[in-house]
Image (cartoon, rainbow, N blue to C red):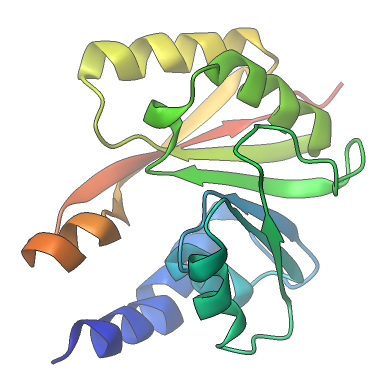
Length: 182
């Protein structure tokens, strides 16, 4: 089976179920920060109302736009962590999958996610390329920024980039941090 076919099947089945298990509904607003060609954005769009797919790569966003998925809005980022297209407390989910390790200021990103997330909203982090110590420190910082509750989705995340380059399927834990309600 071709990789593209495999990914499409994953998006419509396992990916859709993963996001439903996360609590996504057809009225959810989602930001997929660092979406690349949109592997997760497409899966989220199966459950969500609106998905903002954010990336610095215009070519990756063109690939995603070419899929013509009505509830995905692509947003080209200038490489910063700001999300000016999102109003305060207007988003249900912020996804940062396989990217947080590259951010120069992770705390600033978490504060920006806090700003855009509704009370009770979810910051979902899939941290590849980080040691367990780095993941634990990151989790502690995120909790301090107003996300006291975290649930773990064990081996729910896929490292699409690794699979595309090596043919090896690497799975990872998704940390779902819930913004405090009050």
